[in-house]
Image (cartoon, rainbow, N blue to C red; front, top):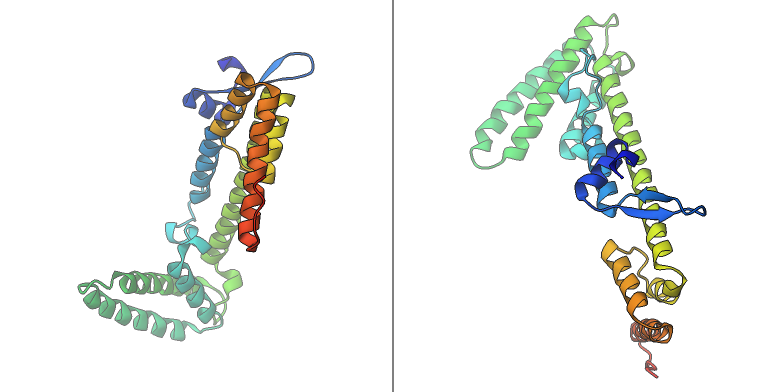
Length: 253
């Protein structure tokens, strides 16, 4: 079985120790990833999203590459500074650097009283103004042009890369959940149909592996009439919940 499971996702399934297997029309078995497998894949995709730079990209800097919406207040601080810097002369940028340095020293004194978030924002602001001054000093124009700011362009490229990776990971996780769910339902067979229908009508659309196993156990050990009765219980529970939510008297039958 291990030879038939290749790549990162297959490795995750093998580490978890459990594989769901489905059969095609010809009776051949095919491994379907266990739920924890796609979760491991998503985790690794997320790690990749945090390190999008190529190893040979010597021009990249950590502070530029980390700029993303997830940065919260720090990301907002950097964005605000970049907008303010657009069109400023070198002299104006020098003054902004000096002001940021003064703010940093003030925040450093207040940090002793526990205001570390202000210190973090002040440090980032000073660092960003220094970076912009370096970019402006090497630029050909007399004012700072964000479109020619290589550091800013790298940061924006990295942010788009993270968004693309996150979207791909979400789509892969969704597809994996659907494949796993379909395999479980195929294993349970037609006898489990009433239970799955009742669960869906009760609003339970996302089933765990334990949920699917419980369905299989019920259909394996109970006769069809009893399985249908269990499904009826779920349906009556749903009707009662809806009646209570609507404030109307319920019919328990």
